[in-house]
Image (tube, rainbow, N blue to C red; front, side):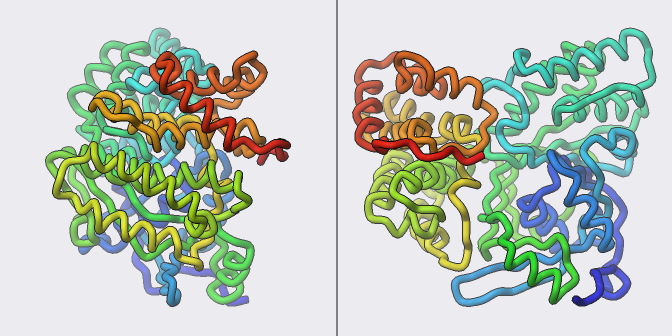
Length: 465
């Protein structure tokens, strides 16, 4: 095995921390960290990243000077580079370091990749007060402020709770404005998170809510890069050939569209290929409905037909036909001028890349939330336009059939899904879980029932756990 990566041997400088990131995972390293490393002013923008569920990535990165390699895997070959924008990596529960950094006036940005469900917000942006973890975080912070307790003693186990704690620390330090940049696949994610932050802060302290409203800019984003779970072979090769215990493999394609203000500055992400727009909605809808929507369809319909990867599923005529019919409904809702035909053609090529092993069970995680924001949104808006959402209803039915057939990955809605499956009308309950409107529409519900019955396997298979 070669020696571990180090900045001295690789000739990679250590930029100062000016960005804090929540959710240190493969996608962050393949996307925001990669864009930052490629910016013309990369030497001015270091990232301090905090893990989500597991501390393993932080431990591995710390052992190799926080460097890692990113391999861009095309159909014809690989290109590997060393990425050095992450300069600190910590456990997610290291609240002392997190709050110190967020309170530092040199820190200008907090970015997040915590999955849609990780925000613990309702579809309209309100905090999910029924969520025990978030409710406890709000209560702990509220009590601490009411009793003037030291913030260093406050517990916070949710990402939103930690963010509120960090912002309260910054407010007390008079460290100035800051930009918060959610990079998860939620429509209008900046407005959505801003709504949730201010509402949750209002449950804690009016002064904190007012400060966030005045000093925190929440930027909307659309992120796009297929980053599959690392295979054992790729992990072993990276360790043996490059001394990298924390590598990332991603497709060559990468896209980042942003809308919003950065009152304390930002990297020159445009020089790395990012796009800044005045109206992000059509761009995020294009990506969310076409790429992510197709992924969710393949993750549900593919396993029902015996497929394990995106490339296998998109090669199946039945799966591809459903994807393309669904795309037809989605594109009819999008404005002209954002490359629909070219984008769809590129997606087929990206999905079919045989060297990107993107497992359907990975995409299927938190499928209930993903279905709500993707196929359900297209179905409901198609109804609003006076058209029949045949394909998007079939896409919803595919998820229901997969759940009923035992093709389940971990989901934040697992308890609700279990209750639905145990009900007298499981299809109706599952449909109501992702869309009360469709469940209350007899015609739409009948279409979903018919498709679910046709797609559901006769004998359920074991769930993915």
